Image (cartoon, rainbow, N blue to C red; front, side, top):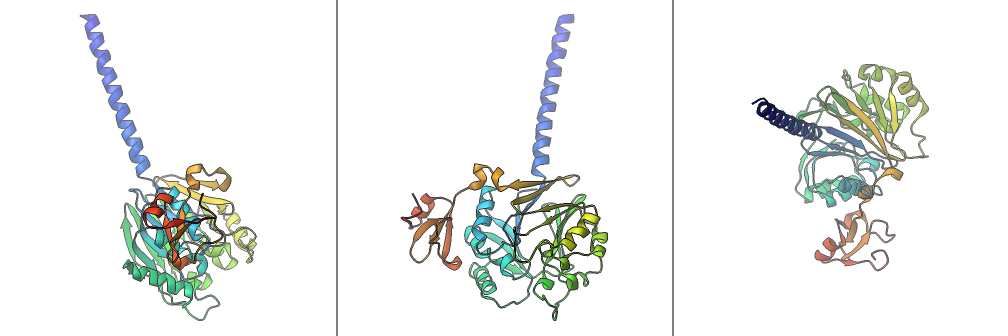
Length: 342
């Protein structure tokens, strides 16, 4: 009897352990699935931020220059993105919306948020026409607007009002977003300058700051940082850019505030959080896996020829269509370029 009792007890203990292991595994998967990831892409001198929400939804804030557009598409595909739920054009400068045509060609988009500022450039006209042609939901959210999406609160802090008569009206009418997930928050400051900062009565404390205007001296000041009290900050800029970004004045202010500072020079900056803690890591180009260096193909709508992204005979942005594979391009009726497609 004693032996039988021990064996039953042992079997019961094993069952308990297996159940506990299953619960822990399920909890781990749930914790992984409930993470928020904000990835500031290395697009050279420009801005592009890819957000993956806890339930897999996505938001892309800006898309860099036209030249950076294919790189944005390639990065998103390497991260298994199949659609973009929210596409945000913070303001109509070409280093923020130039890559939008490539993105719109490559992914279905749920809705577009635009600053509403009319710049009148060819780049802006092509972007707005592409949105119209695809019948994508379109809005111009202002300060006070908010939306909860997959457990994350998205708030628009600016624009508060139309600003004109400054040295940089386009920058000073940017969409400024705040994302809050549990105890962790992000401020995506676009290219906001001094005049636009003054229109916001108070900025709430924020965990991670995407520094305004590529680290320009007019994108950051001591009062602004005192309100935010960020723990980490990310500057999106290109190496040896003609503007001298990031400016030493902005860097000095961030360092004096004790902020951990990162730049996108040489690689993406990735922030992940479970709503309680957060981690920041930099993905250097040299460290990217083969999966992240996914090849894609660009078709010419007029000639019906498709190319690799590195080909020197690529069509204009408006005349491009993107394919995940050569097989997909061929099925769509395109033939390979004789120079770049092996």
